[in-house]
Every structure is written in C-alpha cells, then in structure tokens.
Amino acid sequence: MQIAERLGKIPPYLFMELRKKINKAKAEGVDVISLAIGDPVEPTPDSIIEELCRQAHVPENHRYPTDEEKGMLAYRQEVARWYRERYGVTLDPEKEILGLIGSKEGCHHFVLACINPGDIVLMTDPGYPAYRSSILMAGGEPWNVPILPENDYLPVFEDIPSNILKRARGMFLNYPNNPTGACATRPFLDRLVAFARETGIAVCYDNPYGEMVFEGQERLSFLMADGAKEVGVELNSLSKPFNMTGWRIGMASGNQEILAAMSKVKENTDSGIFNPIQYAGIHALRHEGASIDRMRAIYARRRALVLETLKKIGINFEPPKGTFYLWVPVPAGMTSLEFTNRLFEKTAVVVASGTAYGQYGEGFIRISLTVPDDRLAEAMARIGKEFA
Ligand SMILES: *Cc1c(COP(=O)(O)O)cnc(C)c1O
Image (cartoon, rainbow, N blue to C red; front, side):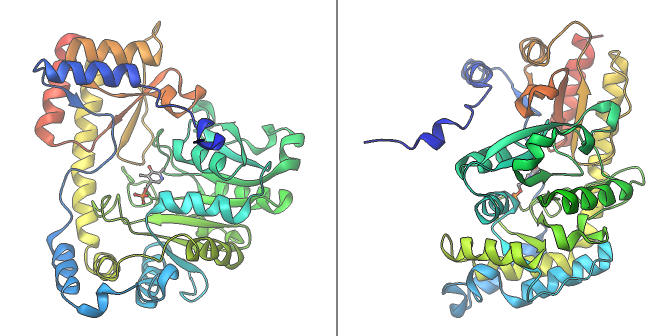
C-alpha cells in the first residue's frame, strides 16, 4: 500500500516535543494551562442553538441541503445583508456568495479552483499553516512573502522577485491577521487590488477575524476596495465571531468566476451544509450582532490583563489591534522555542512559538485569549511571579 507523496510534503507538527512534555506533565498531575489555541470557550449564544434544535425537527431538513454545495439562497441573502450593513459591500446572493463548511475548507477549494500543479501560490510568513497545506495538496508551490513588524506586518509587493511573480497564480492574505493581530488599511487594500490586476494573481482574502478589532480599529473587508471583486474572493466564517468553531459554517464572496469554480469543486466533494446549521447561521447573522460586542468586551479585558502582566515582567510593546491573539516579542537573547519551553517548564503555561507560523515568526510567541477568565488570571499570576 502506498501513501500519497503530497501528504509527505506537508510539514510535520512542529511541537511534537512540547506536546509530549505537556502530556507527561498532565499525567503527573501538573495543572497545565494552554494559551496556544484559538478556539473560543464561551458557548454559542442560546438563541442560535434553539434555532438549530427547532430546524433539526423539520423532516425536510434531514435531506441533502437546499441548493446543495452553493448554500441555501436564504443563507446567501442573509450573508449579503450582513456585508451590506456591516461593511457597506453590495453582493449578489445568486452569484457572488457561496456557503462554506468553514473558511478552512474555502482555502482548500480556492487552490483547487484556481491553481494548476506547479503554479506558485503566495502566502504570508508568518501565516496560517492551513494555507501551505492547501497549496501543497493541490500540487502548488507555496512561496513565503515576509510580513515584518517594521512594515506593520503587511506584505511589500515590490519586494517579491519578478521570476516568482511570473509563475504565481494565487495569494493568501489574512487581516486581522492570525498570528500577528495586525490589521489591514484601506490604502493597503487598494494596493492589493492594483497588485493583483498587474500580475493576474487571484486573491484569497481570509477574513474570519473581521469582527475582532479593538481600540477603535476600523472593521475592514477586502471587498470594500474598488475592483476587489474583479481579482479575488473573501473567505469568512461564523466560527470566531459567534463562538461556532465546531458548527462548520462560513462563506466565500466576491469574484463570480472563482466562486463558480469553487462551487464546482464543492459539488464534487461535499454536498453543502446541513440545513438546520444554515438556518442557525441565518439566525446568528440576523439577531446576534450584540453577542459579538459582548465577546469583544471580554477579549478586550483579557487583552488588557495580559499586556499589564507582560509590562510588569519587562515586555513592553505596541500590540496590533485585531484578533483574539497577542503576538508578543520574546525576551532578548532567547529564541521563540526556548522561551516557549522555559515558560512551560517554569509555569506550566503553554503558548505557541512564533516559528510555528513560519521563519519570520522567530522572536515572537502567540498568546490566545480564548481561555476562561480564571484560567487566564492564574496563568498571568504564575508568569508575573516567575519572571518578576
Ligand atoms: C480559525 C481560522 C480559520 C478557520 O476558520 P473556520 O471557518 O473555522 O474553518 C481560517 N483562517 C484563519 C486565519 C483562522 O485563524
């Protein structure tokens, strides 16, 4: 029996070593606190769950989903309304929106829809690891575009070599950015559209943290930029804003041609989202905007607590204003992995080493704010004491 070579190209989990240590510590009864993973712990709002239950009792909803891989029209119409109200973006629900089983799925389908084997696909470094896996699984060649603190973690298009651009057919971007927390700006989105027009590169703008912005930061969608629909799609998701990561529901919006191709991939892969989940999604988008504000307030409070603790132990920095992560510089003289290990050994607090997101993640760790308040407070108390 053979296992496909393309799977071998996907980098192994970088923190096997750390994971082993965590499991060993847990087995020994150590109280391990993980701040490494971005997965909201607060429950999905009740009214969304109630809508799911109500719709789950309707027999027609047990069949293949309405409009199958496209997502039911009522869901796409609700997405259009959401984009109009929250971002001032006009979308045709018939042709410019596609339901997704989460934005991660969308990454994969984007590559299968737009990329031939051997084509280069640009992605940022640091960046979300699933981009690389999607590119590799489709036979594409990932090329890392550094995003550096001195450039506000935005790519500098002029620095991408022309021989790379010649072979590049797609690009993944994600702002508010996981892992750095950086946000895009309107001038940057205009530069992105211009860059895509000049090079013919299809843009996949992954925006699951669009709602997760702090300190007056403007909410931005790629589709707000003039001409965005001509050059790319935006992926979005109910996972992060509504604490619905397990539900698997999202959307792709924008360029009709790309969406039609992604739809064709989906038609031959899955058969869409369970109807009751789509109804629950409609309900979330229509009625639960206020729960996003509540979550934002919770994250803002946790953010402040972490920043205060870091300041106390001598880590002072100007944090970017998006996502529920903090991208924190490690103390001088230590690598990301050294600091990650040291933190774990001294305090049993687990954070993600910046290098898990690419070579330019060196010098940073990522702290996630998706932990219960009391656990975060305990983690910060331990860190404050140990590194005082
Ligand atoms: C969490 C996350 C996703 C996955 O979102 P789903 O909709 O749950 O698949 C995609 N992209 C980034 C950058 C993320 O952090």
